[in-house]
Image 1 (cartoon, one colour):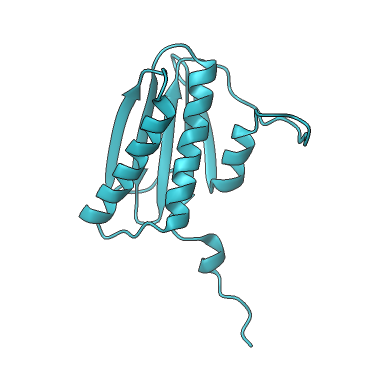
Image 2: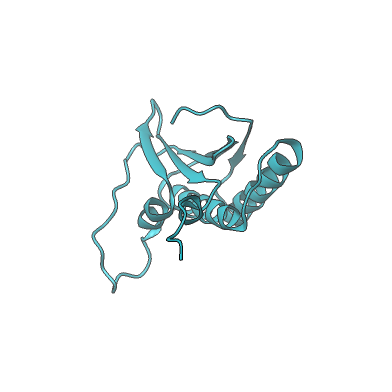
Length: 146
């Protein structure tokens, strides 16, 4: 996912209670800082999707991997990248649709809202990067003229 990032921020989460809420707070603070310091505009939709992706990826990391979770947020002129590292080397796979299944829909949610999703095995664990566009894709293409 090559792109020139204007700003990056990284932090470690212990994986305990409050970990997901902390991750969401970090994400919002990061987006606020990016808007204050750089010529980018972050829509409400992008804010919501960034928080959703952070929540889902951090939830999975805390649930399935022992130890800390590392989160890096990056923003460019066109997208926000959410990068989550955990210690479990198992590459997640989206499950088949099952309306009766309760929970375990996180990866499918991330895949549905992210412009791009990359999972990379690391010497220890794995790194998942989800890219969220700053512009609403439906707003980028003009509708039919009347």
